[in-house]
Image 1: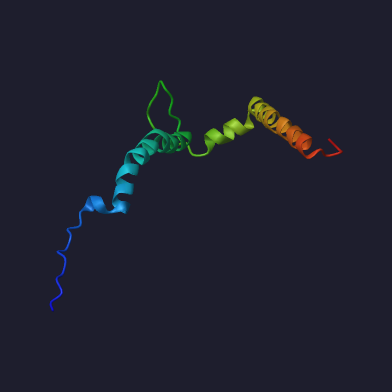
Image 2 (image 1 turned 90 degrees about the horizontal axis):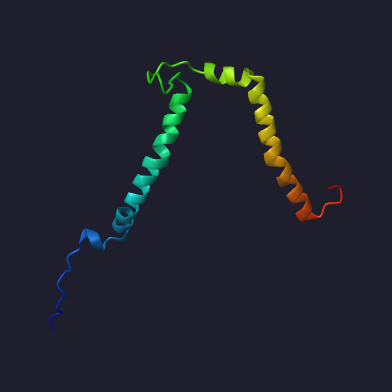
Length: 103
């Protein structure tokens, strides 16, 4: 008796689930990188330069921009107001949910 072997089935790239997953996810990943990642990196690069809308030349100034901003009393007041505005309702909500006696 001879055993008949079934003919080997050809394997196509489109039959590979890992390939299909990567293929179908690639447009979404591309758009996320283009619409979120690239502007995020560009904003970080711009924060270390003195680029403005009127003068689009990139001149590296390092941390000088951050020093000027942190030395400004109006910015520090706005930062404190923002922290207070964000933290106080959250802490009151947390106290209300936990029914803490000291709230």
